[in-house]
Image (cartoon, rainbow, N blue to C red; front, top):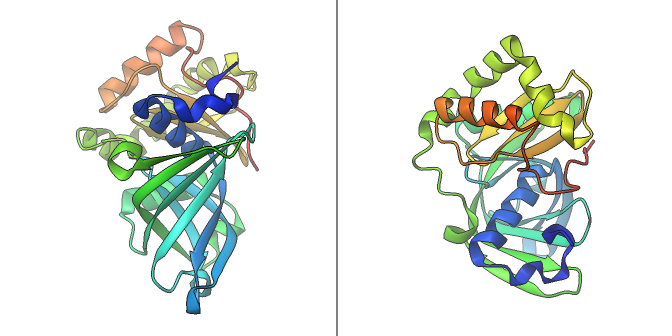
Length: 245
């Protein structure tokens, strides 16, 4: 049984549970956000999401949907539906430009371009993972978030890497995703972070976990070469390549 469908997943070592929680959040294109409104009444709505390099969610909200005190919980289920990840923190209405670019590469179309929607980053305070049987495990922000402090070169290079790969090496993406049953040759790279890549085919999105942590453009290059030589590698958790609308 794969750990993503195992009800005992919440008993994993802390670093493994955090990796699973981040993967679930990074792979999502939609989530629910729960936040208090005036008088403390909870408000829940569906949002489109992406993630920063450290795994913190990025999301869009209408101004009148923003929580009055900034506090919110972003809720994501894994594709199998067996695990629920909740990421809690405060919403920051001024994400960095690189994070804005990451979001809009992932979220396209008229709804993403709606000028009435504001983009927010969640400054993570804690997270939790809930299994199908209701058991819950909490993670502090320092446990949930990936430490990307030594991967600033990758973040600065990301847009250039994407342009270079899609423009000059589209076969690399096809080779990496083909073993996942995503054999079409028109997938494009839309994001790369220290733990993996995001690819798109129109509105369809898939997440591929890299076989090693990458912190620079050079690291990324050799990780992709290695995965291509291995026929796509084994980095993606089984069954989690399901695409989302």
